[in-house]
Length: 52
Image (cartoon, rainbow, N blue to C red; front, side, top):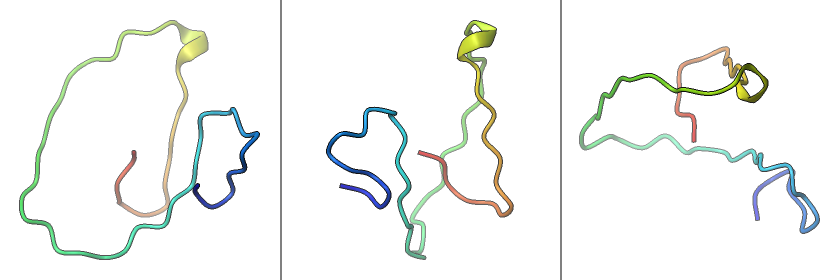
C-alpha cells in the first residue's frame, strides 16, 4: 500500500516516493492520447521526474 492510500481508497491515485538510482537506459516515445474532454486531466510538477 502506498503513502496516502488506505484499503477503502478507490480514487485510482497513489503517491509514491522514488529513490535516486542510476538509469541503465532511457526510452523515449511519443504519440497522441484520444479521450473526451471530461476524461482529460493535467499533471504538473515543479521538478522533472517520472510519472507512473
